[in-house]
Length: 306
Image (tube, rainbow, N blue to C red; front, side, top):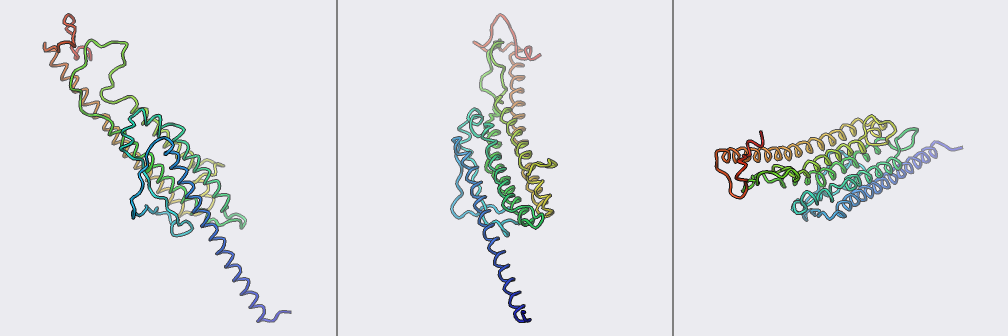
């Protein structure tokens, strides 16, 4: 029979071993998550690199952005550097290069596929805390960390630079010479300064944003095993609020940049329409442009628009 002193010794030993086990498990989980975040960042950057786009390498000594998710101070210690697409290289691609490169639908989907794989592995590794299996708080912080990294990559590194370049590719200045008349009905209609590929690019970015929310956040989708469902299952209100803030910031910034690009397109259309009306008005007074008009027709731009 154990006396009181031996009981205290055994209890102390059990407590020590339990503490060591918890520390060892926490260390293993921290190491696993760091590897998972590094792998996810590498795979996402590789998706862009394969398209021929150039990534801007962070300057030496530049501190990476630390998300306000509480992950960096808890389980996760790795913070992926922000490596945005080089906007100068994107401008050289033009609309055709963007549509066949970074804005290709398969390229837009690939980072989301890597992210969903990371979520599935993390959930399997950390569990949900039900029935004593896994730590719910750790799971919540891990899932929030993965989602935060994807918001930063898909936004600041991927979509945001492309949206800016789309607006910068538009030439708001009208042509130096009026078009020849009469127009050939078989030729494409004038784009008034805004290439049709601009609107196709905007539509693909809109579809990519919807896919990002559907494939990662997936609110109210039972059985999706995505961010919203996992965080709700863990019961961590703090992590859920932080993830919602990340999601809201992502879409707010994307909306603002998209509005800027579309407003530039509307300004371009307005400038070109005004130029057509003014040029047509001058020509309608009898000032025809030599070599551009059929002298027997006497048709002006204003009459054509009417």
